[in-house]
Amino acid sequence: MSIPFVDIAIIGGGPGGLALAQGLKKNGIDTAVFERDPVRADYVQGFRMRIRQRGIDALQANLPAHLYEIFLDTLGLAPTENLALDEQFNRLDDAGRSGGEPEDTHIEKSVSRITLRQILLSGLDHIFQTGKHFCHYELQPDGTVIAHFVDGSAVRANLLVGADGAGSAVRRQLLPDLTSIDTGVRRLAGKITLQDAERHGVSPFLTDFNTHIRPRDGRTLMITSHRVDPAAYARHGLIGGEDPSHSNISGFHFNNTTSYAWWNTAYDANELGPDEALENLGIM
Ligand SMILES: Cc1cc2nc3c(=O)[nH]c(=O)nc-3n(C[C@H](O)[C@H](O)[C@H](O)COP(=O)(O)OP(=O)(O)OC[C@H]3O[C@@H](n4cnc5c(N)ncnc54)[C@H](O)[C@@H]3O)c2cc1C
Image 1 (cartoon, protein in one colour):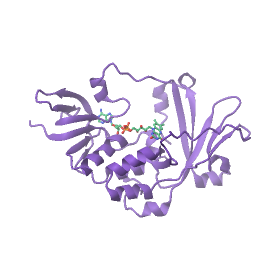
Image 2 (cartoon, protein in one colour):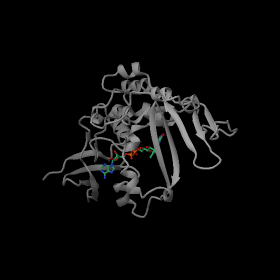
Image 3 (cartoon, helix red, strand yellow):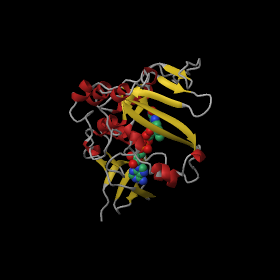
Image 4 (cartoon, helix red, strand yellow):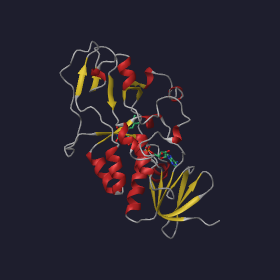
């Protein structure tokens, strides 16, 4: 069986792998992305991603101009002001800095992960392949590398890029001594539409700021919002619209077209149930 060849094979079609593929394509370099999952439906995908100037600059460099314009046009709005409150909603002095790095001169932006994926996938029809679960690679005497997939298929490349996330199988083979360290922190998060928040009388303190609730006793809760402009979402066809690949997943979680507030709070791992139980709590 002959093994197909591509100049640069990228394992993993997350934001990293897809942005790289866009940049290579823009520069006329032969590439292909091999992704395990047909739909990105891990819980974090239902939320926005904060993106700072360095990330925005990277997208500008890697995307064709029309996609970069769509990215800017469909960006969400996040509150710019921080607020710290106690459990009685009294303001605390230390609201914290926004956390920008020195070279980050711009305010961070909020991008729906679903919309960002739609943008990054645009134009990659013959480059992005799903159902390709990478298992291992083999270096060849001629300097190429063969990547093998669980389905028995393989690809030969001049360069193999491991963009397969924190648990990267490429990294495990290349750098077996590098292990992930469990911080012992587990986060719970949820979201509510701004319309529902208003209907339920949720205070603007919780929807119009990056708010940290710091009770004297108990867990800190962080809550913020992501506002979208439906008119912008309507301008770009499928990009920014509700994603058909999520249409059979019920509930509001994977909605990228509605403004919402979202919260998260952190626990020590031993305060909650076992990880498998937490993962199986699922998405409502
Ligand atoms: C709760 C949370 C909040 C975050 N908030 C932010 C934020 O606000 N801003 C920010 O910049 N970052 C944030 N991050 C981090 C951000 O999500 C990651 O840095 C980003 O997703 C990394 O992108 P990636 O493409 O490198 O990897 P991933 O997004 O992990 O993508 C890896 C891809 O590889 C695929 N894959 C995995 N294994 C294989 C395999 N063996 N074969 C083929 N494919 C495989 C996966 O299916 C996936 O599609 C957050 C992370 C978490 C968990």
